[in-house]
Image 1 (tube, rainbow, N blue to C red):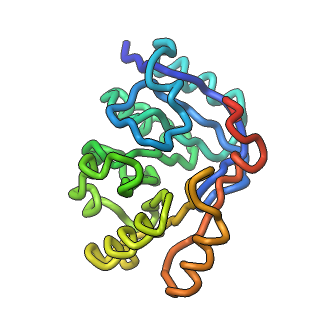
Image 2: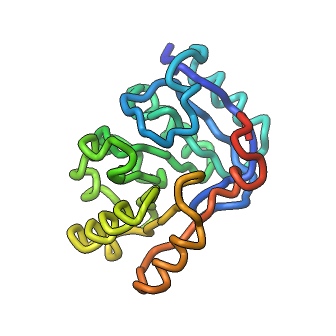
Length: 213
């Protein structure tokens, strides 16, 4: 029976993106090939426990939610995440996948909302960006930039133009917690009239780094 290595499954308020504030079940997979400088889920690099897909679905159902987010680590590092995503969609959830964008997303069920990062220079992982994934993004999807500095901001603006991203999907600009003042990023976005959604990490504001929140 297919299994996935699971770091944690919990219910909280969605902290980012279009469904911010809604009760959401989070399925966090273990393992990630990247080591971003600002990562706030290093505990998910290793450990966890193997779980059968049906057990994951059963535990998720206990939360009685509309929204489910599959995250990590990097969920795409485990191939069995693809049938999990499809089965969650089959059960009527609004399913989102949070991915670093470093691995191929072509196998993801079309019903899933892809929330993909482009890694900015301060992450230390720009070489991991899998730019061909941009072609897979649809209007329902979201592309996120975690911005740590003015250099990151300039780089991100250049990518918006280079790939005509505003015509492809929703764009998220997030000030990296502890690196860049949110008001500074907000001022830059307003000054440059960027077609992006400025966001704060609601879960960090409410619970800081508390695990499982």
